[in-house]
Amino acid sequence: MPRDLLNSITGKLIGDLPIFCLERWQSLHETRARVNLSESGVHPLRLRDLISYGVDLEEIFELELGYGWTKGSQELREAISELYRGFVEPENVVVTSGSAEANLLAVLSTVSQGDTVLVDTPNYMQVAGLLQWIGAKVVYLRRKPPNWSFPIHEAIEFMKKVRPKAVFVTDPNNPTGSYMSKRELEELALEASKYDVTLVFDEVYWGTERGEPKHSIAEVSHSERFISTSGLSKAYGLPGLRIGWLASGSKTLAYRAWSIKDYVSISPSILSDRIASRVLSPNVIAALKKRARDIVSENLNVLMSMISKGDIFTLYPNAAGAFAWVKIPWTKDTLKLSYSIYEMSKILVAPGECFGSEGHMRIGVGIKPELFKLGLSELLEVLKILKDTAK
Image 1 (cartoon, one colour):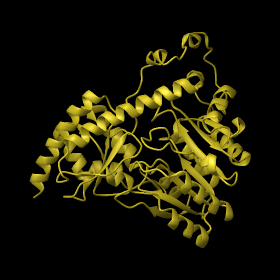
Image 2 (cartoon, rainbow, N blue to C red):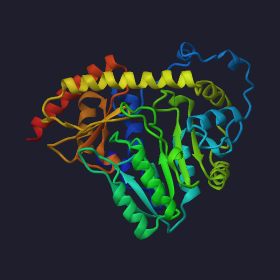
Image 3 (cartoon, one colour):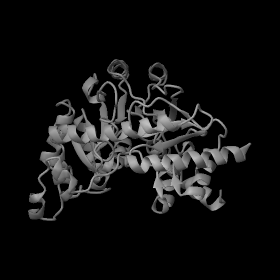
Image 4 (cartoon, rainbow, N blue to C red):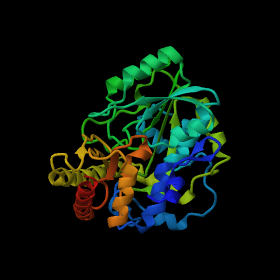
């Protein structure tokens, strides 16, 4: 693997801010990838596709292209509030430029230099990187195979011992696809309320679960000290709208996030705000989530039918998300392996090192099924060659 590429995706960027491995890895390769299996959402919809889901786009042509509302329109914030079944007031919703901005605001709204925080891992490492940058004391809560469940009892013990400022969880988890039951959420929320701990949940994969429906942290919290971040990129297949949000039970936290947003993006696109307001109606939400589950289920069935008994990789159970989390039993250097795959086939996967978990790989299962089947077949062939070469 070229040294300059390795340096461009690892190490520090500014001060203690680490280079965002996954985003750099994808950005450097996705434009030349022939088959992109590194994504975590479902195949994006075209704008015209929304019409078939009952979204009226005619009014968009009459919209004045001015600035939008800095917090998001009242209509959109009310629609987001309904997603949380009214457990979050519209005034406590801040619409953001994707869930990535929402995560940034969540970190800066809750944590200061020197604060102790608990962070779920393996994970999408944006939050962990930001916490390092601002000088927080990060304690990692490590999920373990084969189920990769959130270590709730370990989290509770840490809350009792170190009284952290906040606990950061991605639920459903990226990259493992595991998510917490309502009982687990209630147990965690109860203990957090005892020690005045803020629970910050990245719930962007909410709606992709293929078993029991997931409950939001907003629905079970025993205090107002919670934040949920989410958006339209993953289950909805609308990443190009760049609409995310931060929702909190605390007016103080929501206002703080809104105030910090003034320094970042000011306001969401007025076009995206209006389209998102129409998308977030009950019938459209249900239809888009079904589309996501159908795509993922079809691709997962193909994946399970094509893999062997674990000699190429071991597939872990996946309950949510548009990705498969696999272990490579014959090498720990999955960053080098992912680069070799790309060089040989122009197939792009996400190496486990970018989630803090070497020896693993995330394979996107949200692309068009016909393309996925062909891409997976080629990926397995390349992996077999590389495995035989590694002996």
